[in-house]
Length: 413
Length: 180
Image (cartoon, rainbow over all chains, first blue to last red; front, side):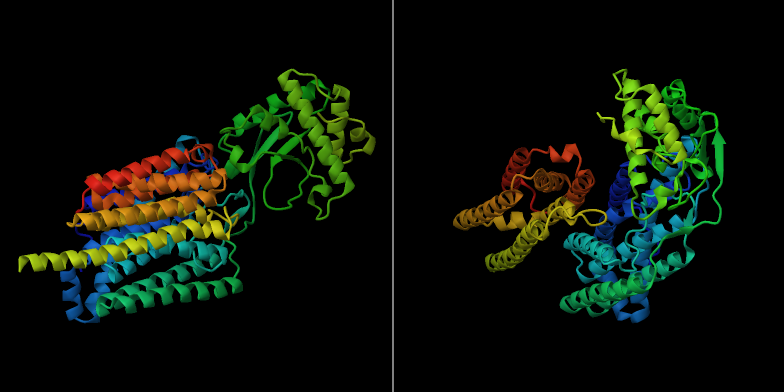
């Protein structure tokens, strides 16, 4: 076992840089994670789904050099133990390399969030999740390099991994190929421990299976047999994973017991979850500025509280701030977005019913008319509503009761 | 004796090159066509399967470059002409087939342009470091993968990508390195 000696060769570093760059590229395809420490590691893991083929390709590329004909001949002559140790060593090297790359990306993401004035606590679960696809992709690369010690194994590893990951995702198999990048708000949610443990076990099984194929390839040196064993392993893993996925709940998150809010400002008062409160002052000030036309029209905003939406179908006595969680850091949010965030001043029961009611339709129509009125006011153009009608509509939205005649005789622009 | 040995080596090398060339062609055309046949772009979950085409096409093309060059550089001039003609014909047929499947749809054009771009970069990297050609192609393919549905990729000019790929391929076939 040669351990981690010579891990940072020129080839390794080039592969590391390419993988980390790819991972980083995915990270910055969005800005919704910036400022939220609870969400940042989750989004940082998003890149692993698409970068896994690169990890596998690089693993095969580097392992084919590591598993030199001399080393393979020596270990084969010494029995099963040295073969297992050689393959394990090759795999550990690749996992360490990939983890360094991903850890660097994770660190950059956390630093960017922290620099932005982050809120919330860093969860530990995403760090465990990150290890799963990395270990599986590395095992695929090592197995293919052991079967086919040629540069072609890199291409084969890319093909296999992306094909396997795709099948796993569309068949909802219990294999952790896609472990990050949730696009929903994580406020009021926590990582589900049982799912994490199940997926950890699944990743261990997948990794062990491919490493076993690699050991057999090194021992037998028969290309057709080894390739057949690899194909059978892929098929069986997808099959078992799909069956297991049908019998287990794949939910990554579960509701947490308590959601804490912090509030700021008045007319209206803005409340955000603690995890998303990094830019509370700026958001509150922007919403208050956007509410000026409503105040000028005579709407009483003093007693209005707008609360960040969280969970599913969570009714509460306050109005809901109509901003996505990713907009709460203020990045790329327009004045129009802040104005439209005012348009659900009460959490009416109609918003939470399964079948749409006529009242719900009128609530939405009223909100739409007010959105156009606010836009026109901001742009300095002629609005389709009078100020009095706008006030009546907003009061009706707040009372959860919009009369038909209030919305029927207005032509939306 | 040495002539016979050279001939044998050349024969073995040619067989290997032919095999690899055939596999490359089958994989590239199979990968290029399959998603169009199953429907594109896929709406399912994360990333459409077709969006991986540039990466896969570029990587396979880059990996097969050594064999590609060996195949196109036999010592016999007549054989060189025959192989050059066959390869050009097959490439043109494949390209024509792909252009037909695009059917004027911008997302398909973006995918094909991305694939040609990745393969072109693979060849350029191969001029400097042949072993890393696949990584260069994979990098470009990865950027394309993330950029689909965005204006920058949808506006990738297919004609420019085709010309760049064709010119690079011809130049590489004649002047490119044949060993690592």
